[in-house]
Image (cartoon, rainbow, N blue to C red):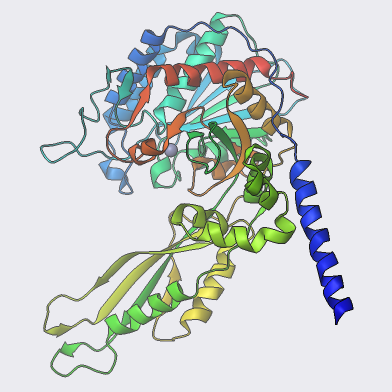
Length: 489
Ligand SMILES: [Zn+2]
């Protein structure tokens, strides 16, 4: 007995020593920034053009007939007038109604081209007596050092920011080493089927392969990563998949005074309840694991000890992450019932009940596996189960953090934002870039925008805005990025 206790004691001491040793020997994984170029930009002129960009109501709708043709064509004309050098030096193609593909031919044909993606469309914004916008969402106005309006954070700051950078580089006589594509979709917010998907189709038909794609998805966050006081730039290396499943039940109907034991509404409710009770298991996949591995050296000692020893604390960390919706989304295929329709009158039994459940798939999951699991969990032949078309995608492949593309984004961030920590991350929403996945496995998600926690609600919400200095940094980032092109090994 004594021997056993001694043995247990020795094992415990050994475990503690390993935990401490791994925590103490953890060193920063932040790359050294190379010297940055001095880039002079006219803040006021930049803000003025972004203001004008906001004024075009390029709203995308699921029902394409509602899209305002003049807004999209007007916006394109505005781009042409605002960026004359870009339009003289690059080939511009209009793809699938309003999609734009610019090609800036490089000197070196042997090296794979790169592609910058962004989208011109925005989500609707209501403005009226009840609206809580401080300034009308499509007025495009700079007040108190901020450019206000729909699209200033998603995603016109990237569309304009990229073109501003290219215009500046052309003015400075920079010629790209390898070919650069710039692809602007116009229906990203409703799935990208007519914009990015068509641009990808065109490039595929030309057998184009890409070194990497840089698209939106993650940003620089301030005060959003717990226990880290410095701003953190996350480069998305994978995107969750997306699937909507329709559940429907039909029944006899009739007078509500003589109901059957279970009505259509009851059957459907119990099916949804089963799904919510049987959540997918929490898993820490590579993008999230790598995020913690990269950031843990910057954390206080206790947390360093935890993250340096995931072999021991994996379960604990997953439990903690799963306890809040935002972090739960990083470790789980999530289930969200979003639509429930049934019934016409209070004394009439519904003959039909219908619900839509939206799933966001963790890397490693597939649409087929989710469908199988839904069937098994509901296990009720009265409930019809069908996958909806529309925004439907498997999780993306995981980009390589050792790739030239990742290193190039990382380096440019450290140059332009020296105080910012950089780490890989997982994008929990769906973006246009998934359409380019046949051309490269390295799809990276990063917009050089700084967001504080109160800014998160502005995206798709009210009072969307970007600071004029922040917008200048967006342009500086893209200029630096292209200037670096080819120097990162
Ligand atoms: Zn967006």
